[in-house]
Length: 210
Image 1 (cartoon, rainbow, N blue to C red):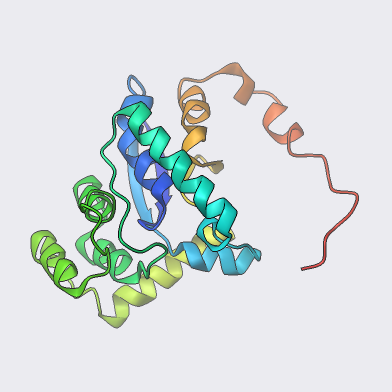
Image 2 (cartoon, rainbow, N blue to C red; image 1 turned 180 degrees about the vertical axis):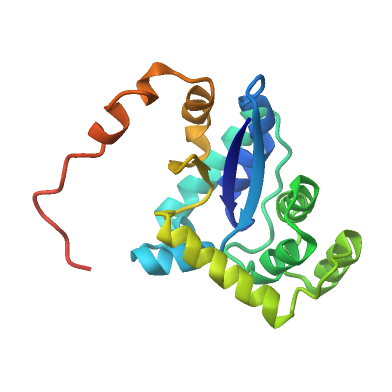
């Protein structure tokens, strides 16, 4: 059985769609998932990127694309009242509760199946915490430190966005990487030869200043 590290932040609609689609996309494969909360904003800051919602034309396209994908795949989706929002309470809650599939599903659906409500509304967050009943306090310093450490660990492994799937040290980024991940799990021969490394060899001839 293979282990997949699933790096996610519930702020990402594509992480939500990937979470919902994963069982069907990987049906027939032998795998277990380790769910790893990570602060997407921390990844962006490290790699010098802006999030899709921070660039207005890209924000508009992202949510149009998201809406189309959800209806195509029959996945329930309601965009929260505000986006982006502060995901730290949700990430810390997931970390404190122990991020298994049930916990991650509950957190993801709080955001993306919340009837368009504010994902960060204090009353909704309180209700969510009561439902998950974490063994640890999400506001505890230890939980905060674990989330920071997880973000640092993701960066050290080369994670630059969410969702990211780590299979044996190989990173598969994005919702549309699920078919490629499936192929790797099934032992497609492309992954046995030099193709994986060779495909990443080209280097830029110019570099844009930040």
